Amino acid sequence: MGVNAFVKTSCLILLCLLLPACSSDAAEIEKARSAFSRFQGAILTGDRDALHKCLTRDSRKLVNTIALDQSSKKLLVTGGNLQRPNVILKIVDPNENHRASRFVVARENGEYRVDLIATAGFHQQ
Image 1 (cartoon, rainbow, N blue to C red):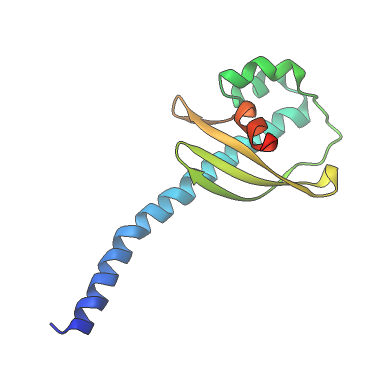
Image 2: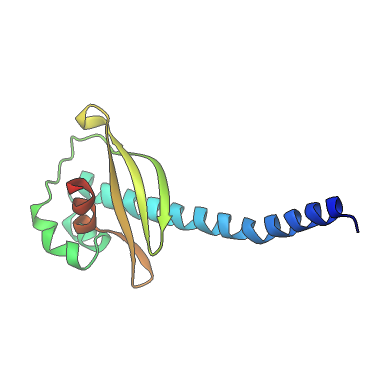
């Protein structure tokens, strides 16, 4: 096997090894997006019990401080990055002149939940 063939074969093997990781990352980001969608749905329908279930344990103490504004437009998720064990979602807020921000969605007890405390930390940086 020549050097050129060896390099091509090595690259193909590496690609085959990395592809499952990419699809796994995409699946995790999609699960976090789904959790964020449930969070928004609870806010927009005024369902505090559902909202409580969408939040991390530490964030639940803030549930009564969240305004349940049924007239607001949904925040738009424009992307996400997996930073294990969390997913950082990129958000655009149509209610605030399309202001960009981020939300932290954390894996807790095998499920993704919105972490308001970590999200607030992002906005203070």
